[in-house]
Amino acid sequence: MKSTADLGIGELAEQFGLATHVLRHWEAEGLLEPSRLSNGRRRYGPRDVTRVALILAGKDVGLSLERLRETFQAADGGQRRKLMREHRDDLQRRIDILRRAQEMVDHALLCTAPDPLECPVLLAYARSVRLGDRGTDRFGAGLARTAGENAGGDGATTGSGGQRDGAADLAHHLGDDRQAET
Image (cartoon, rainbow, N blue to C red; front, side):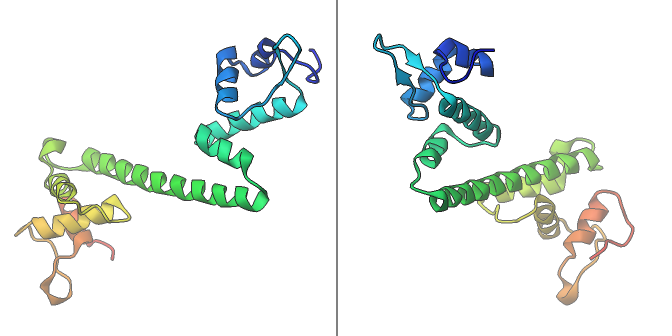
């Protein structure tokens, strides 16, 4: 293998399994700054090889090209850490959304309704989405809350003050009449 001290665009692209236009695009986006020969051909050194590896690693963890550029151009490690914290917070928001989505699908699979589209708990949650009430941390907690607010006369237990116990209501809806854990 040729030394990484002096690679052409095709050679660098081949090392990473990329098309050459990807490297040109990253250059246009300000992510790469290859040196140029007198005839204008790009030359990539060890720093560029490392940068391509970092770009690919960043993309693997969900960083956008814009966020990568900001990170590379940040003044110092402190600024880079700030950007990484922001990205971590964005990831956590997406993870929370995906967790709620998985809980919804799990509920639909376990529901005793003949058709998931007839599930009273999912329908109640859908109404809450329409009304903008999606502030729950967990879809399951939201399901229990909406089930308790929207179901009636089904034998679910009540908590203090006569309010419905959402966990018991959800357990009853799923066909589990055992005492729900609180």
